[in-house]
Length: 166
Ligand SMILES: Cc1cc2nc3c(=O)[nH]c(=O)nc-3n(C[C@H](O)[C@H](O)[C@H](O)COP(=O)(O)O)c2cc1C
Image: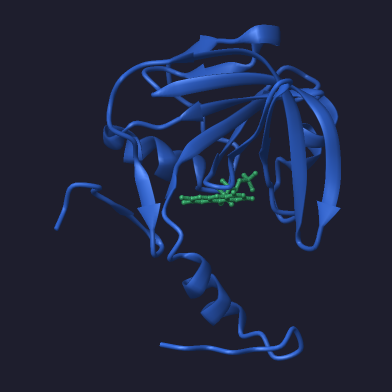
């Protein structure tokens, strides 16, 4: 299907469908609220930015209840989910306060929670924050990372999918 639109005629649903053709991994981004409460959201907007110095970014929507915590915390962590961690992706994409209830997590730098058995974790201090339409761009300096072998959770066309499926 071919869609040609100007910025004045963008159909948001069609744009979302088109953007969904870009397959991504899935991560849980975490931080701590000022009172020490853990905060986390599922995100596929994670990206590597720079190797030297090591920098990463992710893009929280302005609609996120947790956005102010990410703005003010000064640091965040990225846990890249493995293929069998779709339930965690669902848990952290459900808006609300109960995301960590009954969940065992590892303690990262500054006490920020890290998802156990993630494929990779990146712990970062926030470098800059840019406003970008209905989202923000949060750039971070990587301070510590770890990774393991394994298959990633993949998101494509609005659904979790199997890289090996035909
Ligand atoms: C696969 C997937 C990827 C997502 N990626 C993002 C993202 O990059 N940025 C974002 O703001 N929300 C993203 N979301 C939606 C958030 O996870 C969801 O709105 C969030 O958990 C709401 O948290 P809140 O309690 O802070 O409002 C994604 C959801 C899914 C299922």
